Image (cartoon, rainbow, N blue to C red; front, side):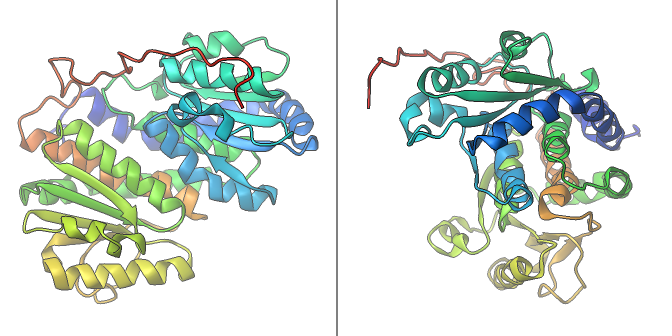
Length: 373
């Protein structure tokens, strides 16, 4: 038995190290606080459009943290993937406002990460905050030393060696919350994450043992972004053999519910906010009727009967839903890992033929013509 209970791959170790890395992320942000404060002070004074960007998992970071940032700042914050910016940059630059661009990148070497920032800088005044796990990556190198940019490079251990982003996801999300001055109790996150990891191998293995063909993840508000990340982990680590589907708790009934079959396991993230939570509980109860209690898992703090007898994966409250998501995602990460192992795959390299790559390949960045409206 390994320390993780789910093998000794880089993926497993990077999932289990997360509570420790959160302290290190906090320290890095604090060290960069003077530079961050100067950049954000100047940027926010100009009433910018605030855009959080990244691709894949890095895009989902923006979806998870944007609601918390919007409440804290009292202004709109948009999560727009680099893949969307590159294809249609004019959808971001829609008026005369400058842009405060926050880029998330594990390596910073994907073509879209670089192109999205360059396009916006061509179209409008931009102040740029780069949160990355690799100071040697092309994105960090490009913007280091720029007078209108700050690069926050996270500790090396957060730069995942495994195929799928795990500790890099939670590390960059935490950094974003701290950078903008949200009151995040990092020690409470550490305690909660440690508690969840204490029984994660057993709970994840039970889900994998049911041999699901589909994993449906649902959540409300910022937890919809968490659901999207959870579904992606299933797809990545199982080589697409366990199909991950994500939707909001309310949106699921509007067509996506058609995906349910006798090989589906549904996972509902219960929001810490009472209003949103009521909708999460409603869909969990409905899913219990459709699938049976043994095929529905609720992640969060719930009584045994609150969700109609669904399986409960306890995750302690840790503040806002955006902060809580950093702990709750452990349930999805370990479930994807357990399913990967159950299928006799190699989690660190589930695509040995190179069909999908750790850093995206095959992208051609087409020239964006000057003067296009």
